[in-house]
Image (cartoon, rainbow, N blue to C red; front, side):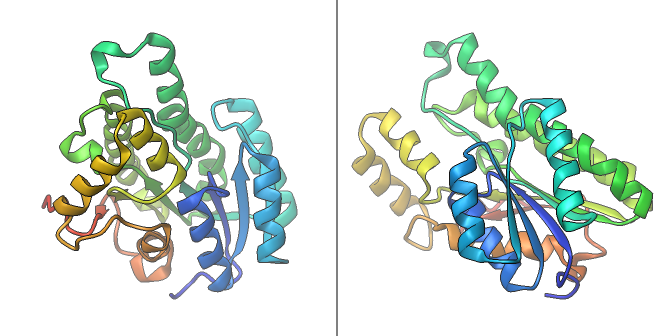
Length: 252
């Protein structure tokens, strides 16, 4: 894709399923990748696997000061950040009536506040350079709802509204903000969600039947859409939401 070579990209949750697939794809396109993850060892292993094009940075995105420090360290090591992919997330399967305020806070801190912290850290530099790409990873749960994911869906719906607002605020500054919404994807997060539901095999089969393409998504299904929004091929696209779900949702 055009405009990714030698560009610096931060991917949060970079050592996870979708995150690691995305980091590998960016590196394959010639970008320099900052792998942000709370699991420093996992981030280090991925960066070592990728090679010189990647550096690992331990970061708790729920901590505003730590996030700003990690972004500063990434820019000192790799150069100014051109693209931010907010991919880090966490979920549990719990009917809302059975959930607790402690769980709400953790869900909100990771899935919404963490993304706000990352935007707050990278936007000043993008504004100074009048250029930048932000790709927020939400969820189709934000668009159509998902049983057992009320607070998670609320966080991701908040991220949609936030992204569209920032897209309006900063379009004139050369900064685009777009959203990718994965459907059910075979990641550790999804495995934990299924375990929480109590019958993972049955849930797996239900999702397979519901997806028109007849299978659960894989992490490698996502990077194409993410890199497109980060590339110069999407320079005139902002404030948009793209579902990558095998046709499970077809919201226009």
